[in-house]
Each structure stands twice: as structure tokens, then as C-alpha cells.
Length: 192
Image (cartoon, rainbow, N blue to C red; front, side, top):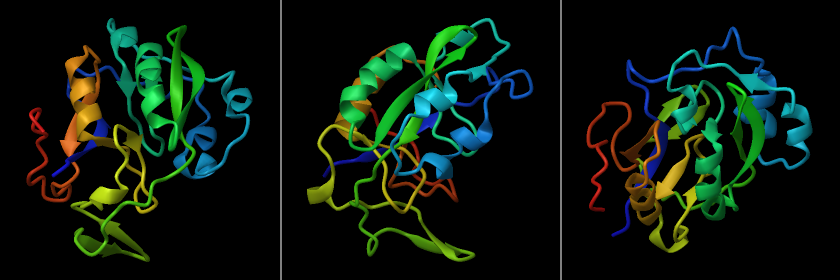
């Protein structure tokens, strides 16, 4: 059985965070609904964008999450993830504390959620799936991917092992088969 993880930013009390007031990040251009499934010259739209993080280890951090977008990643994490994410994500350059970083943009999805076996709960007009169960024959091999039913970033078990073996900072991988609403069974087992 293959396992799938949630690719999240690790946010603890010691985590550097983006100073939204000092940064020049056009939230509308970074919001996940604006660029969903579109291609185009986002780089031109974001070239004047920059993030400020007031923390001594700011540029040593590889992944910054935030509300309404998929995150900002370091140049070295982008180089590592790019070969594994081409079907669902691309990366557009910005600066963080005058260093090269990248906004994650969703450009596609893989329809591999097993809706019958996944937990379902309605929230207004939308149905959310939690925990997520995937159709193994449709899962990508080694990949960072997204599905139509969720705004989360998912990661296959073999890529999660590679990411965890590196010295990336700011990444938290959770069990996508766990329950996010209750926190039950969310711990990622590094032996998967």
C-alpha cells in the first residue's frame, strides 16, 4: 500500500514568518483561485513582488506557507522539487530578503481521489474530503501533486522520503489519510 502525505509549512513559535505589512506581495496575484489551472506569464506579474521576513534565519528557511496560496520556496527547494511537480505546479521567481525565492503556482491536477472511500463532510455548498483515500492505479509515481477536490499540496511516499532525507527547513509532511479536523492519525511515519 502506498502512502500519500500533505506537504505543509512547519509553523511553530520559532518559525520565521512573512511580515505581510513590510512585504510587497499582491495577494490577489498570489491567491490560489486567481492562477488555478491557468498558464501565462505570471513572472511578469510577480517580478516586482518581494517578501520581508524579520528573522535572523529567514533566508535559511526553505518553505513559507500563508493564507490563500501554495507558498513561497527557496531556490534550492525549487531546484529539488521541479522535476517531480511538472504536471501540477510551476514556480515563479520573487525575492525574499533580497534572495531568490519562488511562488508555487498550481497549473494542473491529477484526478486520483477515491471519493467513495474518503471521508466526506459538507461545508456550505462545497464537499470536503478528509481523510483522503487515493486510487492507487491513478496515483503518480514520485510526485508533488494536487487534486481537483482540494487546495492542498500532496506528496507521494517515495518523494516524501527524499525530501525528509534532505536538510530542508520549514517543511512538515502529514499523513493525508489522517483526519485533519480531529488531528487523529496525522503523524507521518518516515518508514513509509
